[in-house]
Structure formats: C-alpha cells, structure tokens
Amino acid sequence: MALDQCPGGAEVRWVEDGDTYQENAAIKAMATARATGLAALADDSGLELEALGGWPGLHTARWMGDRATNEDLVRGIAQRAAELDPDQRGATFRCVLAYVPVLAEPLLPVFAEGILKGTLLTAPRGCNGFGYDPIFVPSGYDQTLAEMEEVQKDFISHRGRAARAMVDAVLRTTIPSVSK
Image (cartoon, rainbow, N blue to C red):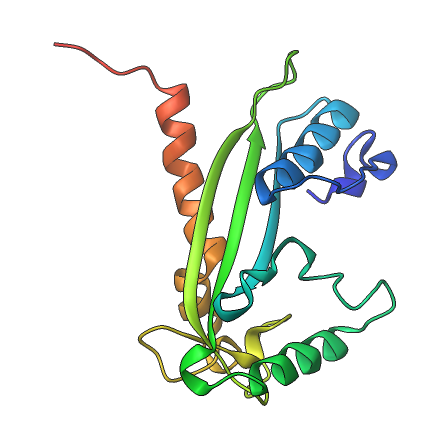
C-alpha cells in the first residue's frame, strides 16, 4: 500500500536533516510510524565517489539544488568523473534501511545496510533503471546498472542487499533464539 493511501499517510512530513544515512532513514521511518500507527520501512541512500572523499554522499539527490533534474545530476557526476583519472573513478552506492516494527515509545528502529561498489563512466549507457544507474558499472561487470535486466540489477543493487540484510535483522530481533 502506498503511504498516501494509509490512514494519516497523506499528512506525513519530515525534514531530512540527519548527519548520516542511518539518521535520515530513521527520521522518515519514525515520522511515518507516528503518523500512520503502522510499522514503517524507510531508506536513505547515496552515491559516494572514493577520490572525492565520499562526496556527494548524503547530498546525492540535492547537490545541484532543488531544481536540478535527474539528467542534470547524472551529467554533473559524469563531468566530475571525467576530471578524474580512470583508475580514480571508484564509487559506492550505499543504502541504509530503517524499520520501525511497532508504534511504541521510544521508537526503536532496526537498521540494515547494503553497498554496491563499482566504477563511474563519463557518459551514460543504457535506459533501464533510474538515477545514476546509466553511469555506474558494478565491480565484476561490464554493463552499467541501466543496461542490466531488472532482475539482475535488483539482485546486486545496494537496495536489494539492504533489503535482504533487513530480513535477516528483523528475524534476529523478532524470533527468540532457542537454547538447547
């Protein structure tokens, strides 16, 4: 069910002002749980360029300002990558999920993280996916994420990895261990 279809979901608002992916994901999940009274799952993710100290990181979607289009952002990162030597174009996609299982104070989110390492291209390739997928080639592959079939991309993506890690984390926190 989409958030705006949940009772109270259309009114959910938050300010994404955390200093980490984890803080931003928790802000969104807790705001959603409080507004809807339901369990909530939220993410924060970003693209980190190794040669630039992890930039743009938390600011991946906003580093060019609120009016920048997706095409502007991709073109801008590709231009930055072109300024680097080819062996310095290493990048990481990072996703942190926050899950608030029940509405009880204090809200205690469960966290999971997924990362995907790769290399940036200086020109887009492929038309699948979204965001920076056309300029990101995962380590061990020769295709960009935008050139991959959706099933393959979802399996190796930072979000897919975070989702699988979240399933494990939730199972560890909700199913008591059995001692012999």
